[in-house]
Length: 175
Image (cartoon, rainbow, N blue to C red; front, side):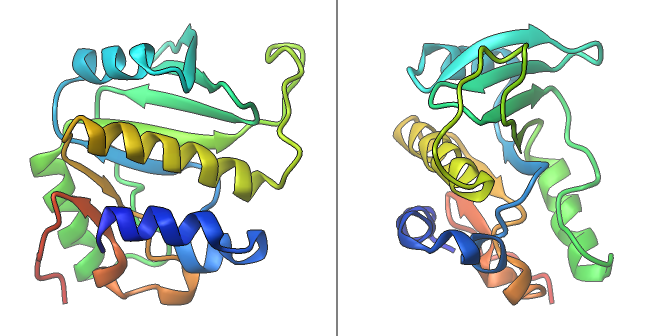
């Protein structure tokens, strides 16, 4: 699916339909072409995310400046990119991502606690995630960084790989 179409449609979708139509849920991955340090610099230079801490496994946590989302940048691609039961098409998607992308960003709703300075957006977890995804997407598009939103098909469209967002847009045969 075209990244700009996805982002625009996601922005106007009702909160109740973000999961089913756009796959918005916790542990939401984005995979990138490029290197870890380059992606770190890009995120740090944006005004949308603030560095929080290093993870033991080498990842980095960033707070979304509007609150309620934490983003973990990792120097690897893991085998959790497509939700639901595994099948040949999902394995092909995973293989493609692992061959072409080396860095991932995992987004999670984060409703604030003593570690987060109490920032909270006045909206649902899904809407907070959609705002963070839209901002990351715009950063990536503006910098022409290759990326994939592996779970962008949404639960209502599981198995419809034409709804997976790639930049640049790709026509990979998964069925």
